[in-house]
Image (cartoon, rainbow, N blue to C red; front, side):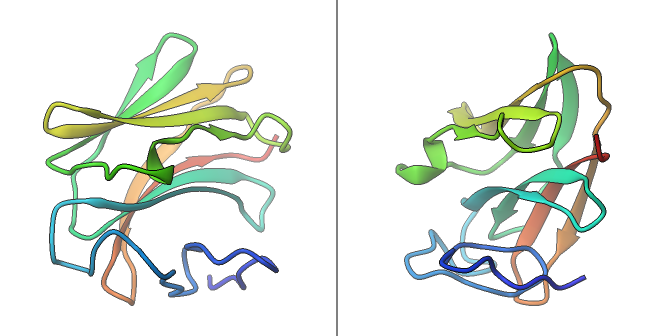
Length: 139
């Protein structure tokens, strides 16, 4: 379901086709993460998303009280993509998200509040980019 971009936000919003200036790569051009993000969903849930220029096969794992998503075969560019996303003030089980390069993979660490079980899925967007979604039910 397409959603309008929040006012004043010029970044990627899944379902809108928005491609911000200075994005790391064109679709299909290289094996790179082009945008990480977090959003609340219309049903009251939330999701962490990672946009890539190529299709990927991510793995979701339990890691202590949180979760780790390993996205093999891609690189994480320098800059804002490496900054942590603090989501503790949203009505979501997601507290914090941190991405880092780990060898030939990108590791996404998701710290959560309480017990939750997210789902993992991938999707190709109409604009040619690919998304990895880690989705959480409403709280």
